[in-house]
Image (cartoon, rainbow, N blue to C red; front, side):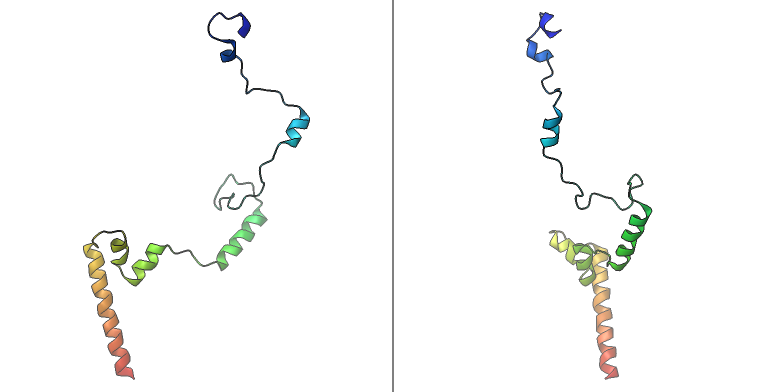
Length: 116
């Protein structure tokens, strides 16, 4: 059909990427690696894992500690630290939290000294 057209070149109309491969070529092709890590989402409703596999995964997850982000760890140590690490001035609330944390540490230190 492309040979009868008088518009453009014949290569424009021929789909060179649509080929019929021989079975020997298909079997020799490099296959994708199966079972890649993190290929399953835990809450994916369309995931075809069996119920037993899902239950086994949940049992493993119960024994694992909850992951805590770097910024969450920093904010537990010093509420103003995440903002300063990003080059920003800490918010008013973070400053107040830092003051309260310092006061509580002083009170606990005084209580510990009085008990000894």
